Length: 286
Image (cartoon, rainbow, N blue to C red; front, side):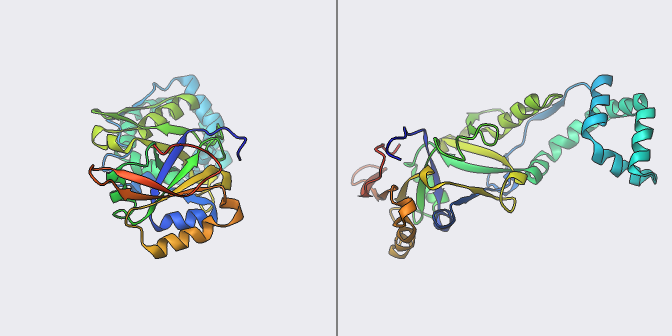
């Protein structure tokens, strides 16, 4: 690993979950509905791009096989019979979809979080390991750990599978555009995922957005050992917890990982980090 240039280091605050990350080399991702922010994935409004005859025909012809099966059952027709009916009455069906567009936009907005949570999962990281508040909130009152990941390694450097979303903190909630192209849709989704209230700005959050279908058991993202570059024990981390973590960190695959212990600064409201084991890469903790 010494010959590989470090990428951006991102930090994951955790408690007992950190032990499982070190043990199993995989990270538990969560649906957005499980998060603690009531405004999570809540756009201020949803805009559906106007449905043209051409777009409607394309949707029905290429992307909605399940539509024929579902609607066919409702009408008492087979999937193929329903498909034939739709193509015979294309203009009528597209016009019905166009008329329902405002209602659909409102339904998507009202149920955006749950609908998204059925399809997507999120992993949450920070650009800093020095947030006293985050140690309190996500490392169980300074008793857990922070794990640092090098984004030069899989899965963090896999374009098309996983994008790092650097969260922006705003006063207003974003707009979601349900666009015709997949590019427009994904760009709009990343905007909603990557926008939070200014109240959360201290987190300096970086997110990964991954579909459930791409994960083990719909929730676990596989890691490789070189992606882990440091582990920081919390200032109140119990000795038994440290021993459990070190049991995994002393294994050959993780022997390159730097180990630190956080401690309270003697005069200021901040943390210091004492190196317990030097890693194979030289870097400063942000």
